[in-house]
Image (cartoon, rainbow over all chains, first blue to last red; front, top):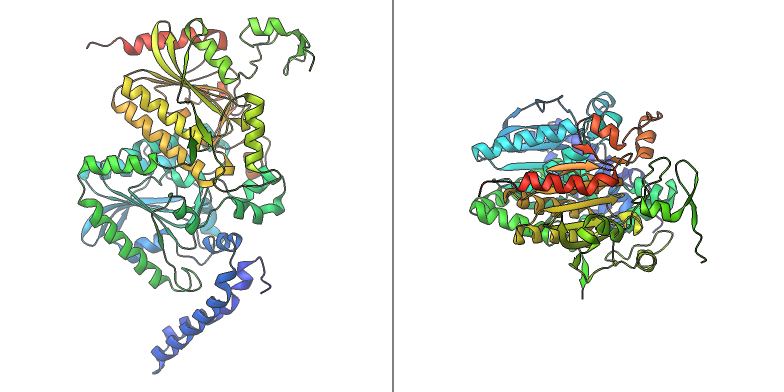
Length: 318
Length: 264
């Protein structure tokens, strides 16, 4: 099968079917349920045609899909009474991450979510999900609060990376991330991390240390963006495809390397084709994982978390 | 290669007698430019009488992703190993500084830009764990471009692993002094290099999260002069001090004496 590099071209038939489902959802057509089921079946068939041919570049496109559910979509779908807490109380509020408290299945949880914008205006306001140091320090403030009250932390990752700007450097971007790594690794409450879109390097890891780290099937997690890697190692912006493939950034690769514990399956066509199904998958994962972690003593939790990251790395000893 | 006794300073371009530079801690006698040190040179300069015991040896890098760009990672490793006589970009040692027993990790930029892959992460972690076990102060001298892309997300996870080990050192009340040499950027800065009880840097070292070129491309502006240099970080409150190489050992020993002077 000759397949285009551009996933957005590739998915057109699926998107058209989804639009027909969405249109039906608004009508009072009597045979609606059956029609939707038939269209879903067609989506499955289309997906079966393209999915075996997807390469890492396609996955990058899927993870960055402008229609993909973002952190706030998950928070609104899964949690109640999300009370957003703004600002790091040091410098500013960083709109590239939302933080706060919410009820999840009746319990209070602290939530962190890297947030991209949907419209052009929102994208700019949220800095395309690229956090500044104050964002990491806001997250730090909220997880320390969670520790004080004994609330578990849910951290949703979706960022191209920490923002590379003058102000970010002046205010200690590296220090902000490093300090979070230190604090998160010893935080005395459960932390559940889910990579829902882009896992962009240290920018993702800065809120990404947890007792459980899961990835949505079509998200990716990478030490540097494929574009950055292509520019540095290949010295060629057109080598993005090779860079994406070489770095093994897909959920299956990372699960195999012991970096990610669990892959959360996405509906046919990706998370954005059936967001409700995606929320359900994430919901089941969260509730199951939180229940399991809450059974551990704090000492056990911290020792297991330490050992989990301690083991990461592949080398030879002789 | 014939031994040319003369060299040119990278900064002031003066022709210098190599011996004069070596006698001067590899700092240009004319303009104070700090030449990059190998890990071994660094350890020799820091430890009393230049004597130390290497520890955590025998950890070899692998190529878990079979990574190939313009060259294979395996070949790059081989070349770096030949060039530096090291297995990877960091060396751990134990010895005394001013009579105080310490653990020191020194990074070597000549080995793939001092980049942090699984071996560097593992050895930094082992140094922290040794310090914890033997109740010794830890000193890490960073000189690194950041995470090693050729090991993908495995290298990213070394940020987490090393920082977690340092958290344990902190809980045990043991001192950790981070020395940043030119350059210290990317994942190295975003993990252990910024987590010292003291973060000190050599003069004019490039220190930052993002590389200057990436920032320039992002903001489409020229960067101000001195941006991301040690003195800039000192001014912005990110370093405890900028310490010239000649004064480094004295500084570290004085700091250790202050830290370790506690009622039992």
